[in-house]
Amino acid sequence: MSQPLRDTDIREVLTADLNARYAGDSQTLIRHELGLCAGERRVDLAVINGEMVGYEIKSDVDRLDRLPEQAEAYGKVFDRMVIVTTDRYLADAVAMLPTWWEVLCIRQGQKGVSSEQVRAGKPNKGQDPFALAQLLWREEALEELRSRGLARGLSKKRRWIIWQHLAQAVPVAELGDVVRRRLKARREWPVDV
Image (cartoon, rainbow, N blue to C red; front, side, top):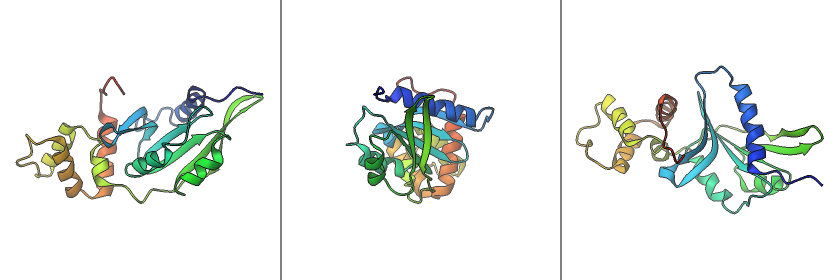
């Protein structure tokens, strides 16, 4: 009997695949542990380029009890989502997730660990503008409002109010473009992420 596949095993295979797929693409950012919804949630891995794709890993030693709440939060932000799991949780995860999620199964074989696409994903139609705006730092959101002439009276307001104004002022598709551009342009990220 083989050893259970752990998060690190799955993450290694997934990261190698994504690094190979986007090698030399300066317009793609691969980010581990991206915080969402003002830090209430973290997606295991995010790929940000012309769209934002989140990857949630459920290894043999994980549990699925948080998956419904995670799926709800991720659906507010990502253009596409991928569950990356093992045979142990494959059927249960598929049953718990919206049909627009892509499903990858990671298996241990004689030649090592490999991945197989079980279900193709579809674009997410349910993004929430406020949740998208929360991906921006306060100053980034304020700069976006300033660039549109909409920042009057907001410079000393809390980030929640700034995010709310941005979410109301910018259509969701355009806001998605703004967020992707801003995330890819960041030179520094918090050290706890």
